[in-house]
Image (tube, rainbow, N blue to C red; front, side, top):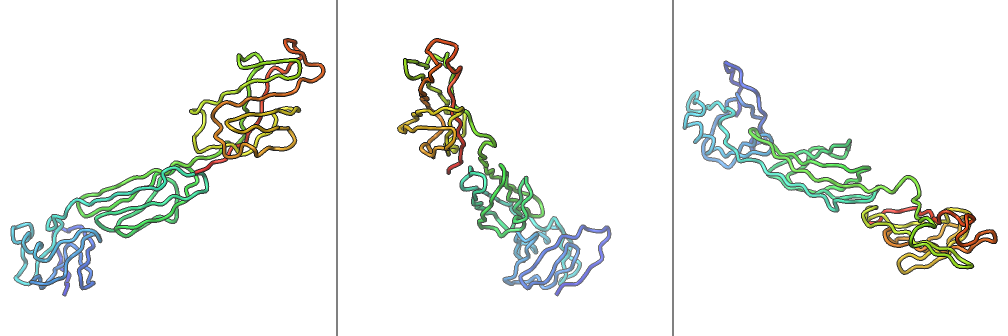
Length: 272
């Protein structure tokens, strides 16, 4: 049985629940604290047995009103520090892909993020959930009891493809360039650190109105301006790209008639 008790000065009301399903608030009188199996749960996360409550009250933390009624105060509960852990798998995804959040805590908690996500909110003490962030997002799992709060974070990095195609090329004056009576060529180098390793080639076209013979890694293909080539699809963009083109009738090695540079244009895709 739970009855209301007026207290002076007022004590902040803190909701709690007991095993019988009865509502209990700080400042209420809870009777029948004898031997039993029911326990009182504060904030849905912090458990104190009846025996523990009586023991603490008897030590003077709160005063007994009479033999059958005890005033419960905030100080009556010496609950343990909450625990919370949160992990994201994988922690890097391509834009539009999903990641899985796994969490475990000492009690029910709250999932949130630094970006709006209506799928997040109150959760059980342990579980998992798929998320589809549009941009890099930090997720948080928060568990609290009356006295303390524990928060764990996990960040999912979202890799987006460039808005514009990428130009790969080199100047004719570059030391990698060469020329003979029929062809001119260059070797363009894309450093590994220039692009995220999840970004790979999708299509390649000529950067100008001419045809190229392109070599990259173990692939060789003819590339034109009019028809995007998928010959290098899923290859990493980093590495050496050898571009060779046939000289036009008015182009002569060592003369100003040569193009100043050779280049191709690549679109990229994200792969996991």
